[in-house]
Figure 1: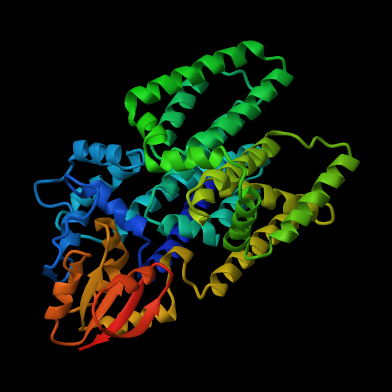
Figure 2: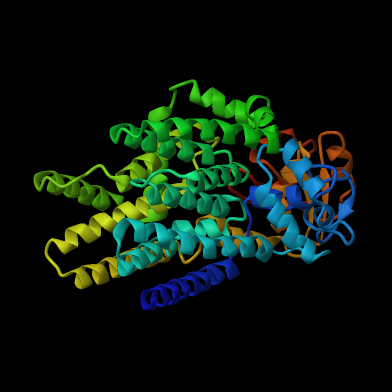
Length: 498
């Protein structure tokens, strides 16, 4: 009983510590990735998954963004709309249900903290579940706490918490699934296992379709383990339960089939899966991202440590392939497949399995230290080593998270926009989301397209800022004196002198 109290207190301290780090970086979050803004629109906007913009109309403040992001009085807790928006989009609805619920509690307002707060709630659940998983693997309270600390104070996990998308939520379900498998790895699969299996799979798949990749890999690992132990009856039952879970999921969310075969993301994924073109480049680039975002560019040392670990274990004739190895290999499979089918090479797509790499890395380092040091000394050094690594990673990024996209040039751009009128040339309504933060600094802003750009530009009687995609500037008509003040590959800003 005393040990359980100690464990509860220890996990609570870690949660408070991680929350403090997240709040610090959250307070410094000044920008949004376009998908983060879409999160609010998909959760709250009624009737469309794109902002409703009147071209040629002069806006100020939140303008058309308010209707898109904000739950208006009387429109709260409209889950039918959330469901329909996600049916029209490319993702399952569970995360957006939580976002809409919290926004409904604060109608007529918009804040980054609504999305961050939801992720922090999942952080609490993740901390507890990860500790339980680590304890099952290590059997040590200190080592388990060290794993949670190492992972949750990392730049990649803080990035997961502050990225207002479903990745913090799906990370919890992946860890819960991994914990369930560890609990029953060498234990008879009973009715409770099958119930939890079905529930976690459905909730995970209702959060993100990529959950299926890691679930498949872990299921294959368990199947191989059951075959090796000649537990054929359990294997047969598991196959039927998995098939039944799939049917039940489709009854809950039949739009999965439409998203997979008719949605543009599904078609992209299938097309990518059926070709090997660029595979090596995609994998190398994803490993490079993991190296930078999770291990501060020092992953080579962990690879060397892992090789030493395998050689020493083999020399001492110790068991190498166990549940931890299965979890690690399943995560590598997820990274491989995710690199192949993801629409872009981005850190978000590996976020749900990074905990497994930290478990493996931490335990390998701990094992090697224990060859020469006492258990307590080895555990202390391992914790300190990972905290230093994580702190170094934050410092190397100027104590900003990657998905904030902060730069001195962007800060100067916002200062340049202050008090100026802006003309925004877009081809599609959704492109307006790229410019939300900059336009909040403008005096007024007007959206234009190819139909009215010339008319609106001719009406301007004073200097203004023209905003568009870099490749669109050649299509803007008229003789304009353009002074480029900022470009980042997706956005281009020009001061126009009249």
